[in-house]
Length: 145
Image (cartoon, rainbow, N blue to C red; front, top):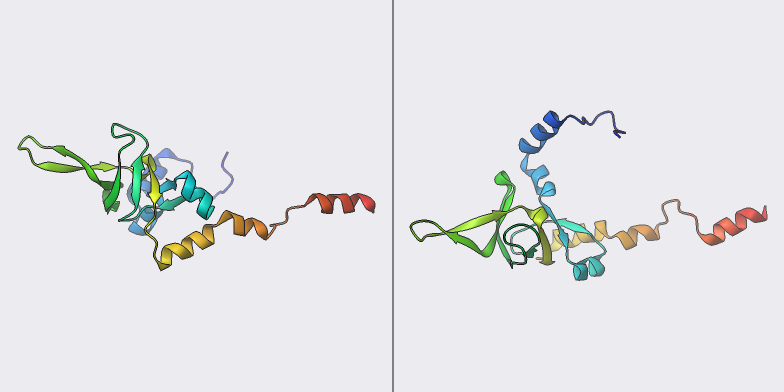
């Protein structure tokens, strides 16, 4: 069900928006989930992928292959992973592209900006604020009135 009247649910418009998206939007689309250890450490579910991250492929013909990201190709919505190649007919190796949603990040390349993103997306820190949630103590006091 569509709630926002400014967003179209048309397949045609959605596809056009996806394939003509600017690089800044593609950066967000090209996100991968974090491994369970990273998820527990940072309380973040997914992150936009970046060069020098270490990933493991979770789906497709190259499932369970891991390596370091050598290139993020935003124009084609793929990433190239070190060691993920096939040979051409003239025995020359060619990088194979994998979509980031088929991968899982096992090691993050952290810099100042990425640390800020992790701090902002931290779900444990945001749940401390309460966001209008009632505790059992609040409910118990409401019945006293």
